[in-house]
Length: 248
Ligand code: ADP
Ligand code: MG
Image (cartoon, rainbow, N blue to C red; front, side, top):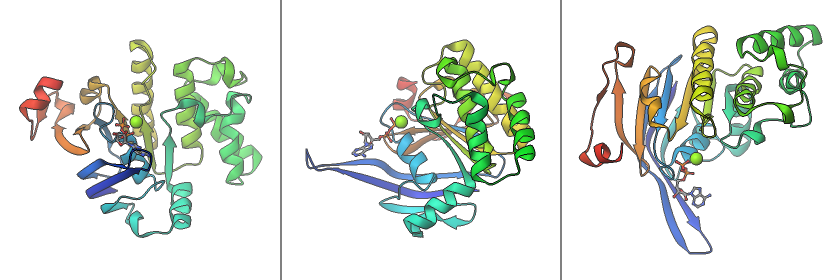
């Protein structure tokens, strides 16, 4: 479903004239319907990776294939169209996912209208999303008045409202306390199970390594570890370096 081979991303900063290698040979495979996390410290290349998988940016080297389509070979316009139909992206800056002056319900209705669904069908599907995301009780509230956890669940809903096969979530719990983090994790699991979406969550929060089916560790733009058999609580790290043990 998502295949990244030997990804390299070099940014150039014209002010300092430095080149920054944000991804340095990252290889990654995610199967259809999988729910995985990618965990890495700040600056390890998580947002860069998400942007490349979403087709917002292209790698400097390597290959990225999503749903059988090679994104790095596409034009910008083709990538935009691909993203529109296939990818639900949750930005790490939550406010960018939502219209603050509109109600929770209207935020969910907008993507449905963009896809020209008949009003009654759109309304029914939005009701289902409100139920799944446990937002029914605040459907009429303005986004300005909802809590951080609710805003993230709503961001998930907005991404899901256009019915993409893939959800990419950038630091969805970055601003949340323990209780709300748990709630968001449970919601993401529900979405994966009931809707069958392929979901990738990137985060700096090491606790994520035990909550999903599989988790990858990245450091300095490279894959540094893979956890397996999480369902049986037998966490194992492959390629675990002593440096990683120190850091986590
Ligand atoms: P993360 O999301 O894990 O914090 P990022 O992908 O945002 O990491 O950044 C990885 C590295 O690339 C960092 O060193 C960051 O400063 C650098 N970087 C990210 N975006 C740009 C950019 N547009 N121009 C220059 N450097 C960038
Ligand atoms: Mg980031």
